Image 1: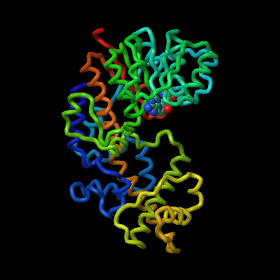
Image 2 (image 1 turned 180 degrees about the horizontal axis):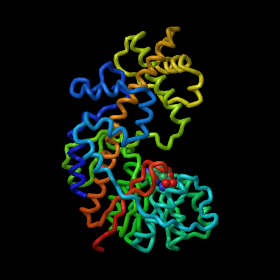
Image 3 (image 1 turned 120 degrees about the vertical axis):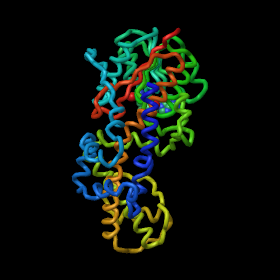
Image 4 (image 1 turned 90 degrees about the horizontal axis):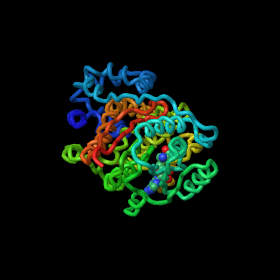
Length: 399
Ligand SMILES: C[S@@+](CC[C@H](N)C(=O)[O-])C[C@H]1O[C@@H](n2cnc3c(N)ncnc32)[C@H](O)[C@@H]1O
């Protein structure tokens, strides 16, 4: 694992020009960021039709193959990203146990539940940031061991507890803040901790607290690496602390910038919203001489249907700018052009997303190893079910 981490670390550092930028801002400039150093790559990117861009967005192998001669050692880097998929036999589900669990979520928890039950160590479970405790339900039912489901939102605790009582499951919901020192009181050394999609600091706090309490096992699927309180990523393991890669919050978002589960409607809304924002930015530069991007708050999706002109008046009012009629079509068109340029630039960054995510996951793996755990990582479901499909399994080697 340490060797893998070091290889990823050095690839990410030597290739940082290809991923350490924000496509949304980079598309506002006339030159592509690699115009001088990699003119052939830029030529290839600009030659793509919008349709080809969309095809490459969903076909990483084809994209990697197309650009391999422009980006040094790309195949070697991508080979490092390979993870085994866990072998699942399928958990038999009792009727009603899946009550209220949405489809994709059910596939995730059944897969994760099966893995956790298989590697179980300890005599209880701790479900960290449990939501309504869907995963805990499966664990309680299949092991008949106590599950402590720890969750911040009281309403989720209440409805989770109600359903658990209805199903006679040995579950106990505890409301609390995973980031507060008192959360440590919920942990004890008999618990196998599970966390499905606990964001940023939340999965880090489980790992730190769990190590402190010597938990016998962890089964964790991390997500939302950017949801942290600090300004930059705070590495846990010694190798990551020694790395020259110091990641900003916006760089921590990079692994999440893919739309595999979004669907056509989400894609269309995003295209419209980004084109409007970029078009309005062009208008502000042209008509009002703004040099820097003016951030505009988020907008209700339904408001997008009112068109670009209406968006401009809305945004101008929020910024206290006295907008008068102008050539809105021209700026909308510019916004669309920039949108497609942004998508072209994102293709290159996309090649590095998984490596960056693995780097972040391996930091946790190495930290757990440092503290006497036997650790492995794998994929617990297909990307189409959730792109956050990396699973960390850890078992304490010495009690
Ligand atoms: C992405 S959801 C995952 C929920 C659940 N594990 C699942 O997969 O269905 C993250 C959960 O963390 C909870 N959460 C957020 N901040 C928290 C905190 N500081 N302490 C405890 N739970 C928190 C949220 O309320 C939410 O239920």
